Length: 207
Image (cartoon, rainbow, N blue to C red; front, side):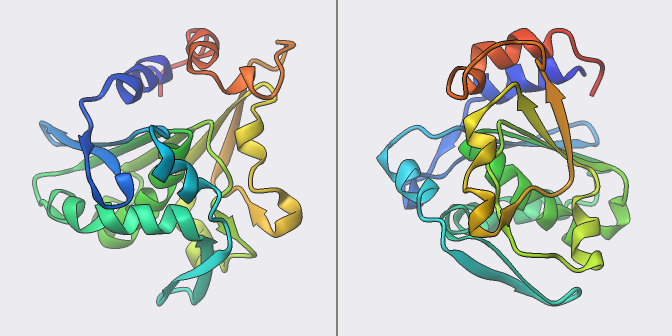
């Protein structure tokens, strides 16, 4: 599957819309592969959570205490118990996680959750955050940082969302960053639009 195809699926997935925190996700097993998709912002509650960016402690085990964006963590904690059984399913031999914008932040947290709870799938859990904002605050110890090894932040041109919250506030990207559309003269807002991601991803290689 190409990144273009994965992003298309992320945009078009038949999301489950939860009342609590307006969380939107889809868990779908296809053979031995579990796909976990997270939707972009689609309402006022999502935007309130996007801007609720004081850092909050996440886990304090196997790597020590670390901090993340409070609003994104609140939404992911709503989804977490609903995907737990799918992630734990022994029939699953690979997990692919993807999200766009607000959903990309949730995909990042989901990626860490899957790596932490399915150590037997080391190297077979991959995550992609298209237009992903910064989620992690402060420095991570090596053991925690390693969980994001196979998570990729996909950043188009000058996408403004990938610069938020500002680094000045202590937030940072984790995993690797794939820059696309470097030659395009798009502004920060236009760079974030789904149609421009699709245009640039059509040039990319297999995910």
